[in-house]
Length: 383
Image 1 (tube, helix red, strand yellow):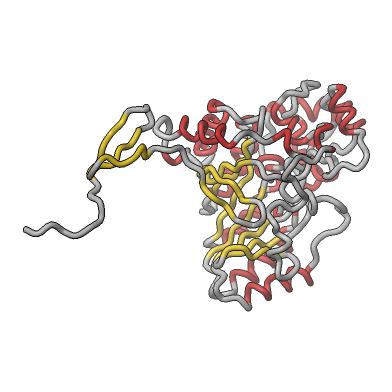
Image 2 (cartoon, rainbow, N blue to C red):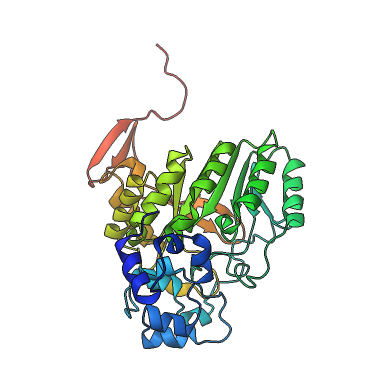
């Protein structure tokens, strides 16, 4: 994988003597993650507020950032978008009204360890609790990264696979975590191959943020393995257009060239991406990477994340700014994953103004009104 300009400058400044091959080894990236106040202060600089937050005891979620991703964090500017996603804030200590550790009630819908079965025909398969870089707004902060020495084991995987085997109505399995791409190729292939062998499993999806925070993980060997198990989809968590570096573009390209359809998942975050220009650039940039924008999420009500949430109306305004002003392929679904396990529910701008007799009145993306014939249901008039 090519080493981008930002990566090269950061590497030469903080890891002198490290070769391109070593820098592009994803395991080296994992071993050399930034995890302490000393690491961050030395390599990316810290504002006083960030230093205080990083020094707090009892953080709900561990801190870890790959050297690759650290290269994208502007020195010392606490307001920079990507920094706020991965460096703690003191606000994490506060639990706002409506927040809790498991806002989506995943544990309630978990019939066996490693499985969340909420929708009739699909399940969530939690393969690992490890990520390479921990997002501070993580929905599963109650689970991920708490003990990185502990990994999900084959006995748990076998129990989860057996659950899918015993439930033939399950046709779609989303492998998530943590980040499944943190597993060795052989472990990930074990899960995928066992699921693919089940005749009622029509599609397998993998949810990952690796192409954005650790693109080096998308190796030719990983891609060769995955392409053997079509139909296989990959959902990529991306936050901001600054993540679309040459390395991220190459990682997405490797997956796309293997015939793997790519979709994106983005969380709407206050002061980070909650404006029309940023979301527009991100969605169009993803399309250039051959990633189809899929979901834009309202930030879940996870404990300690109130400082990330925007009013729902802000998301609706952003969606209105996309529809009609950019390719339909670049318009994601804006959804709220309802607290308590209600599932993903779309939220749309209101284009249907109302009915006038036999006509429906619409307002288009420009704010102009148009009418379309829509006879009210009822008896057909006699000839």
